[in-house]
Image (tube, rainbow, N blue to C red; front, side, top):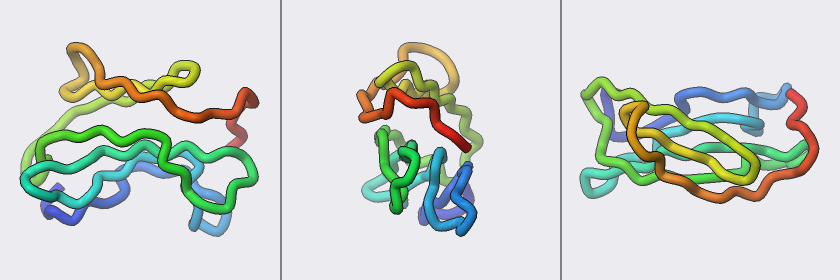
Length: 99
């Protein structure tokens, strides 16, 4: 990222492009830190749903790698794509996500 404002990195949206069904966004930098936010939306919800938020140092003006994995009711965030992940529980439907 070239600014501290944050923004959407990846998103699969509904047909109106208003609701993020699955996506990743960087929050704005605050105090040298920012959050990576993972969105996961249940079928039929009218708003984007923040499923997990991971605090990290600012990514502004640096190359960064990270990975996000979802298994059952857990979202795992790997900064640098290695090491032990940060893990957050998320609320999730037992049904498959239909895109």
